[in-house]
Length: 122
Image: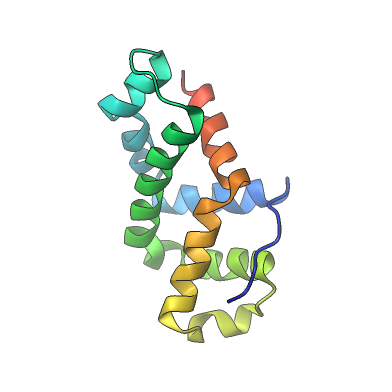
């Protein structure tokens, strides 16, 4: 299984492009869920990591459901993170591709990206 490099500033632009193709409203719905809103407002006591994991699970669900809309962008992005040539991405073993997606959403920097986005939505 390929290991991913650390996310860096230039990756924000790829992530935003993918989010734009998926539709920001789908992500907004994640942040408007009562359990997320209560955690953000402080009504519910949860750690930032726990809140991040709640959001990450929803984000992964959104990504999986929206892959066809951003297929090429995901190939380019995952290729840049993993070192796997972009031309090889469409032919990756199914499990290897989902392992890459899972690695991405579990990265601390990925969680930080969404945690910071949550703070902006306060």
